[in-house]
Length: 257
Image 1 (cartoon, rainbow, N blue to C red):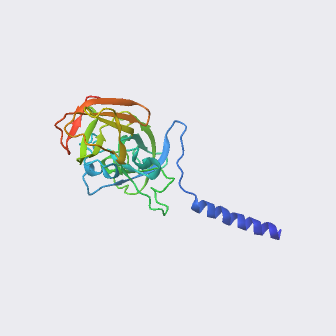
Image 2: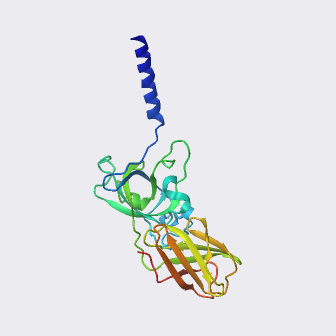
Image 3: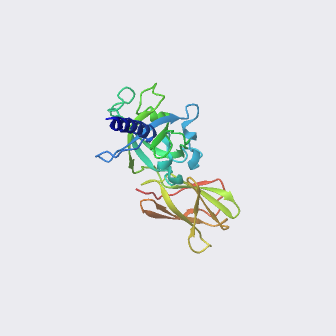
C-alpha cells in the first residue's frame, strides 16, 4: 500500500501541474463556429484611428467604419489577415451576465494584438479579438470591461464601391495601401504595371495593407492585379491616371464578391 500511495500523490501533483500550464485552446463547434475571447481597446481614441499594424490611416477612409478589431498572433498571420471580416457573437450560454443575447457584429481586422509571452490572451495559441469599443458593446453589456467569451467565423466582406489604392513612397520607391477590399478581404499578392513599363511587376508586403516595389512609374497610368487568399484575382486597368501624386487615393469601379 505504501508504494501505491506515493504513486497516487505524485500523479495528483502531475495533474495539477498540467492544469496550470495548459493554454486556453480554441474549440471548433459543430456548426462551424470557433471559440475565442474578446476585450475592447481605444476607449480614449476615435474608433476611426485604430488602423495600427495594418497601416490604415483612417478606418472610415479605408471603407471599414468603426466595427474593427485587433487580433492575436494566431489570427494575424503577419498581416495577411488585414482587411478580412469576422462575424462575432458573445457566448451567452457561457456568460449570461455580460453577453447580450442574440446580438452579433461583423468586424474588419485592422490591427494586431501583440503577445506578452506571459500567458496573456493574445499569446499563442489563443484566438482573441481586441475590439473597438462600438463593436464590443454591440454584443456585450456596458460594465463588462473585462474578458467575454465569443464565438466567431469568417465571412465575406461587403464593401461599398470599388477597391481603393493610396499611393505612398517617393521617386523609385513605390508603396501602395490597398483598402476597401470585398470578398475574403485578405490580400495574398499584388502586381503593378505602368502603361510604359511593359509587364506586371510583383509587389511585396511592406507591412499590413501596404505593398511596395521599386522602379520609377511616375507620370504613367497605373494598373494593378490583386489576388486574395481564397484564390480570386481581379485586374484593375488604368485605375490611376498619369498625373497622380504621392499621397493621393484612387477608387476603382471593380470589387471582389
